[in-house]
Image 1 (cartoon, rainbow over the protein chains, first blue to last red):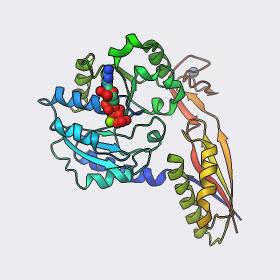
Image 2 (image 1 turned 180 degrees about the vertical axis):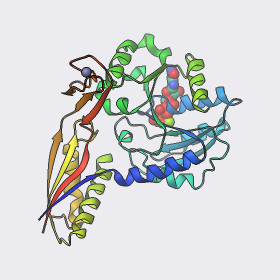
Image 3 (image 1 turned 90 degrees about the vertical axis):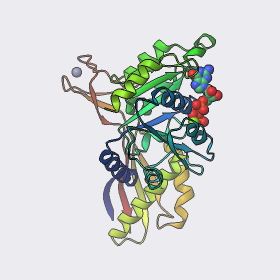
Image 4 (image 1 turned 120 degrees about the horizontal axis):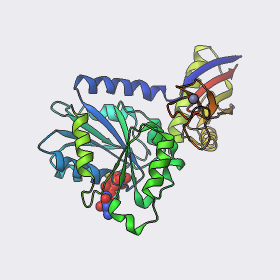
Length: 214
Length: 113
Ligand SMILES: Nc1nc2c(ncn2[C@@H]2O[C@H](COP(=O)(O)OP(=O)(O)OP(=O)(O)O)[C@@H](O)[C@H]2O)c(=O)[nH]1
Ligand SMILES: [Mg+2]
Ligand SMILES: [Zn+2]
């Protein structure tokens, strides 16, 4: 006997993500799912963003990591509210991990919640967490061919942050190519160029984050 | 590796559908996997073989239907195949394109007994 199923393989994840989304909405919280390959600078971006915006808005962070608590410790030093999720080997966060973490993470008083996903450009794109938007960080040292190699996340994201611009002179990376090819995939992408080291580009980036919190 | 959790989901969906239909055994599982779904069909097959043994799908064959990336232009209504991930209408050059197919990650059909 044949059975027609037509069932989304990720529906279990999507339905819990919907619950998270509801909870975020009730708390009037704007949530950003931050995705990049390992070491592109997600935690550095959060550290500098939090420090810059400390007096203006309240930022919370959920840190996803395969095994350590290092990133959460770095965020803790900024004074922001942070909780760690260890995925125990999984290459992405899923909505249920976030749901569980939220039981021990008060949302009151926060304006923006960042969820730093596990360093990986492929898998996190499939797993909605209940966020308002996905943001992808690409550092210039990774090469300018990445958008076309990982189109899924560049299509899904609303924001692209090109990081480590201070290292441009030492690479053969073309920012114009990154922009051109990522806009071919996603013409609505908001692109920022920053250096978490020098602070270049942070005025524009931080103004944008403040505008999201309103 | 995320193909592993995807295959766990596939097996859960297949087993629960089979049970709903009072089937004892799953013989075939058809998937639809889109070109831009972000999963690698070979790894799905590999993980399926590894995980199916303790389930009623232990003898099941996995068949994968690959779905190309296609879009519809929101300006002129043109349907076209998107190549090289360039989301631009090949008739009117508009870039506001709705994806029609290519993101699928579906259990499409089962054969059970
Ligand atoms: N030169 C330079 N180095 C940077 C910049 N941003 C981050 N780094 C360095 O890059 C390395 C990785 O940065 P992280 O912020 O830990 O990157 P991540 O994306 O959080 O890494 P994972 O969480 O492990 O995936 C660190 O040594 C940072 O100091 C930058 O703008 N310029
Ligand atoms: Mg980090
Ligand atoms: Zn058109």
